[in-house]
Image (cartoon, rainbow, N blue to C red):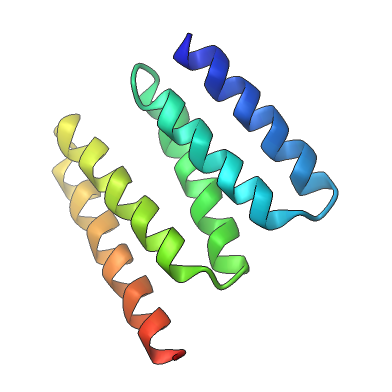
Amino acid sequence: MPKEAGDAFTEAACIYFSVDRLDLSAHLHGDAFNAYKIDHFESAERSARLAVDLYITKTQFHHAAKLHVELAACFQKHRELQKALESVTEAIDLLELAAAMR
């Protein structure tokens, strides 16, 4: 069931992307990440990275940082500690960028 839900969210995200609704596309990729992370980590990682890229494009750095933290937790769970550290570092960088823009 989580894979089917993730696939549906991904398909919807692609549709919104095609009509230049990047904010909704990012949100739906985030939903796909949450569905996939249960049993399909590679798909979850791909969805999270797509969402992060879209959030950054829309200058929604807090959303991107939050997703990086969630992704880091998944990397840690899968014992990919270097990737977890990189994801946390990216989250910190995004939060610093958001603070600098205030």
